[in-house]
Image (cartoon, rainbow, N blue to C red; front, side, top):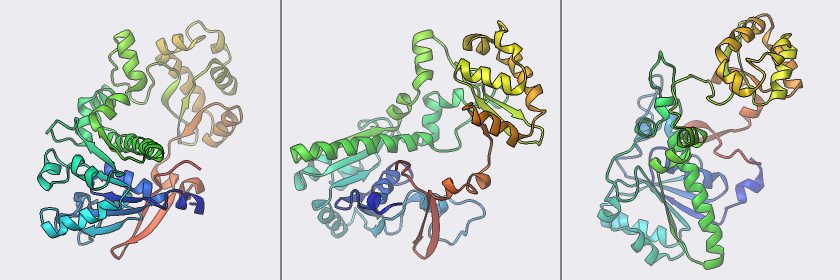
Length: 357
């Protein structure tokens, strides 16, 4: 990362009281932009993700790959907020802080005596960023998986044979982190004018619902309840079908326009499909996608993946090979996003939380 990014927010001080993924990812975002980020953990009951280890990880290590993924470039401080001396140390940190992050269980802020009202009284410029499950007034415990289940994502993900499937990344947590970043950045911008901080609250539930996007509109406008169609797209075809190539690789297409479909047919040598009434519009292709898949599959199987990829990419037709993570991180662009750091004597790696340049 360039020096400019590292110094963007170098004057900011962030207190990170959050645990697990969503909140800590926000702290890491600010840390990567140069802010001083102080992560507070209980002296003995540390962030639970320290123990979320793969079977192959060192069981005696104080940290895990999971913990490392979202706690980069932070100063780690142990404080027991139920201890009056430690609580006073936190208060002293807050007095000079710009941002405080938390994802307390319902009632914990009141229990520790660090409500929004109190924190704002000792530091009127403080921006308080909070993540919860179902809103500030709900005591219901929330984890990403439960939100994926309750907000429709699992009902749409998978195939008829697999049944409901969760996404392989805690995407609701990730998206909630992005929502909180946006809210905090807006609050920082507003503070430049008003000189005052504010409290920003993001719930996993609202984040999930707001992320339903086109699937929500499909239902709200057409009463369409999505079914599990694997990687297929409900509104576009061919899109998401998985094809075997001559050399045994797996590829997929994301054909979003008539021009792209025409070019695909030309490369595969099946131009007769362009005028075929079953496939001459996107809506018709969606209706007849199974038959279209059969036609495409026969042709794709005759061509090596690299040849097909080069031909289609040259014509700006969206096509990609399905890669595992080993292959992904053999790519220099992916390698450039790797960040390394020694945490408590352990050499750690993760990918950057920042994709803009």
